[in-house]
Length: 555
Ligand code: ISL
Ligand code: CA
Image 1 (cartoon, rainbow, N blue to C red):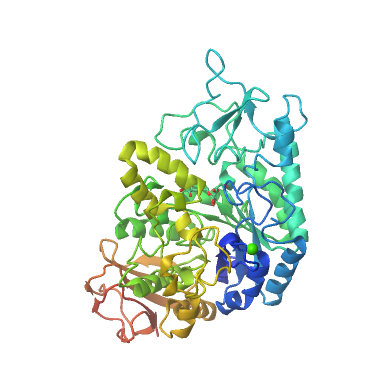
Image 2 (cartoon, helix red, strand yellow):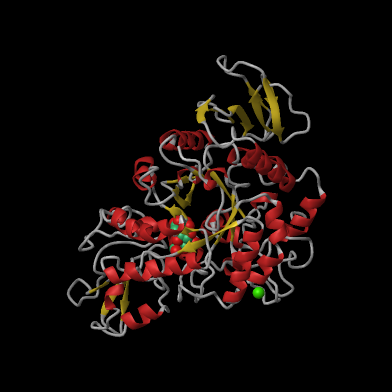
C-alpha cells in the first residue's frame, strides 16, 4: 500500500458559521477562525475541512451555493480566505474545501437564467420536465427528496418542473450536459490555484441519474434512489474531475450516502482512484432504522461492531477508510452511543480512543475534542435547520407533535451546529452579539477554557491520542480483529501490523462490566493509555468501570 500523507493524518472539521465570530454580528467568520489558528494547531491535526464558505442565501446554510468562486460576505473577503490558507499552511496544516456540486442554490446565476424560459442557453444546466397527469399538474416522476416530499418543484414562470434531491431551493445540476462538468472543473481548478489541498465532496455519488429519469420502486424514504445513487456514469464524471485533481495531487473524500464496501472499492481502490476516500454512514446508524436518523431506535453496540468489522476488513490492503463519529449533520456522539451525563468525560474519551485506534483517517468535528453535548432543544422555533423543519412536519403527522419534537431533539442537525463553546461568558465566547443559533446553556461548564485548565479533560486526552497516533504507526496501520463479537457491552479488538500489536478494550455500559481476555491473546501487553487513572498496567481479566477504555501494546 502506498504511503501518503492522509493516511497518517487527523483531519479537523470546522463549521464556519458556528466556530468564532469576530465582529459581533452573531455569525462565525474567517477572521474568527484565523484568531483560533493556534488552538487548531495545538490539537495536532494535519488538515482542516471547512464546511462551505461560498456566497449563499442560507436555505441550507452554505450547502446552497449561489457563487462557486467567491467567499460568503458574512464570513469575510477573498483576501481573508487567502490569509487563512496561508496561515494554516505556515503551521503545516492543509486546507480542504467543501465541494457541493450536485446542486446549486436557486439564486445561482445559472439557475436564474435557466428558469427564464425553455430556450434559455442555461436551461439544460438543470433537469426540467413537463408535469404528468391530465393537466400536467403531477410531478414528472415519483422520486422523493432527502428532505422529504416530492423531489420536483413546479415553476410558474416557465411552466415546467425542476428536480431537487434536497430542498426546493437546491436544484440539481444536469450532468448529462457536458458544459456543466466543464464549469465545475473550472471551479475545482480555481480553488486548487488558490492553494487548497483537496475537497470533501458533498453527496458526490448522486451525480449520475438514470437516463429518462424513470419512476422508482415504492419506498418509505428516498423513493427513486436506485435511479440517483451510484448511477452508471459515476466513473466517467469523477474521471473528468480527476483530470484536474490529479494535476495538483489533491485529496478527496466523497460523501457517499448509503454506500457499501463493494461500492466504496469501485470508487477508491488504490491505483484506480476516482476518489481518494469516501465517507460511509452505516456506523453512525447503530441507533436508527435503515440509516434514516429520524427513525430513532435503541443503540446497539453489536450492530456498531459488526459494521466497523465489515469496513475494516473490506477495505484492508485495497483502499483506505475514513473514521468519524460526528459532523455537521449529526447529533453529538455522547448522548447517542455513550452517556452525556454523569459519565460524559469517560464516554467522550472512550469514543475518542476508538476513533484514534482504528485503521483509517480520523475526522474530528469542532467541539468533539472537548466532549460537547447536544443541546436537544424542545422548541421548534429554536431550530434553524431546513431538514429539521421538514422532518418535523412529516413526523408530526405520524407520531404527533410531542413525539416528533422529541425525535428532533435527539437527531436534529442543529445539535451539532450551535456555537462552539469557548468559555463560560454570555455567548460562550463565540460572539459579543446575539448568536444566529442559541448557545447550549451548559457552555458555562463545558467549554474550551475549562478544558484547558483541567489536566483530566477530554481536550487534553484528545491531544494525547492524536500525538500517540502520530508517534506510533501501530495505531494507524494494521489488521482489525474483533475479540468479543458477541459481547453486548464490551468492545475489544486487536490491531496488528509490522509496527506492532495493540489491544483496545472499551466498556459501553455505565455499569461495571467483566472483561475476560480471550485465550488466544497472549504475551506481555502493556498499558499505553486509558481514561481512568488506575487502569491495570498489564492486559488481564478486568472489571471495567463505566465507559472505561484502555489501549495496550505488545512489548
Ligand atoms: O443529514 C442527513 C440526513 O439526516 C443526510 O441525509 C444528509 O442530508 C446527507 O448526508 C447529505 O448531506 C450533505 O448534503 C446536503 C446538506 O444539507 C448536508 O449538510 C451535507 O452534509 C445537501 O447539500
Ligand atoms: Ca461575524
